Length: 271
Image (cartoon, rainbow, N blue to C red):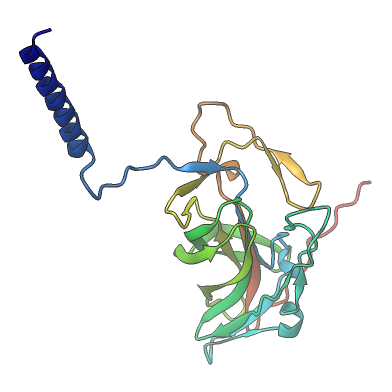
């Protein structure tokens, strides 16, 4: 082949490589980070709080509100602030259960209640940053039947950030909520919820998403499991319990100064 042909072929190859480099730089300029697809995990961050087992109103802690002085007082505070043993329900290895304990440390000040929830990272990934959701709801209680009645009045949803929660690590997080003001003879049922995040980021900024399409859920350290079956390719309904991240709750009865004590619902006996 003629020497000039080789020269032109070489020049053409250089031009093609230069054009390819320019196209790459145009699509991904210097300093630009490629957006990584979020990873999905079925195992997730789990919150726990007093009232996780959904106590009946007559079993919940009672807070008495004095409207004359605008003060709230938690009855039998020492009993409700005792140390709680979580047994093996959040242990990483059921064969070697951990002795996990935490204390709610319920406190009331300036019309707000604060208490500690327990949170553990079971997602298998280090969490550098996540936002948990704090929710509240208030219902009226019927003192005769001991049951909530009427509509639930939701409060404002706030976020509770957590940082540097390593895989397997657990800690106590402080949750604060506004207290309602019942009438002198009124009973209110206050629910404080803490929900796990929909997503979190790892220390290397990889996003991790909660996988809603899970089929079987098992509480770590126990034999309790249930099915959550969602058709392949379908979009989970965020309003369904099966399409929500894990959450914990704490429930309180907030009573007016002259309100009667809530009573257990009557037992229905078979004839």
